[in-house]
Image (cartoon, rainbow, N blue to C red; front, side):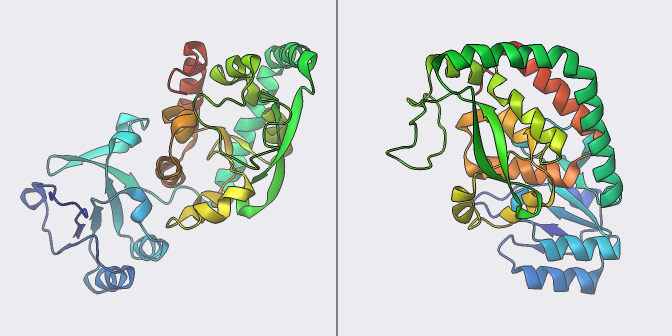
Length: 293
């Protein structure tokens, strides 16, 4: 089965040369109709040309119950995946969505990775945190705590180095950070460029509020608006992370829609190998100073 993209210019493929394409359905097909068609036809593969965030939960659930393989047409924002995560059919690159290991096993392995890296890196990281703390403290409180939404919608307080004026939101209320934000101090701009303001969040990782890799945690003041986007709450199925696909590809300039695409991609394709790859890319970007940020 092939679900076409909802574009004015349809994407031409050569899938019929390699597969027995039993049906092609438009992206505008209602989710209930798509689920009914899958249950009736029981295909071996479901190829989706529309973006990842348009996939609904009932479709994924039924495909996993029936053993139907789901592949999504690869897009530029998916480029951080390893080449082995891509498959080529009909002259197009596809990404296979897999159920992955049992959820509890996955969580335990990721938690072990988080704690192991924290233990190995503590000797190098703690002096850096102490040094930055002393420098930031010369202009006011070195840390600030802010409420964020974590796994399962649970609220927690993230800890970061202060990079803005102490009265940054006194007149405006909660406002998303943006490139060239006038509220950011001169020292704060350097900390943000090198992402050093994120280091205190390692305490949140140690507590289990966050992981090293995952979706970026958002403030509850914005979540109500973001939930208007389809499947936004799926990103709360896992712990938020210090780094991830969205953080690496967009930085502060990324739109909410772009972040959601990246978060849903990570949610469906995550693995320990991907986590290690994203951590390695994060270290590389730290050396470069996050030019995209």
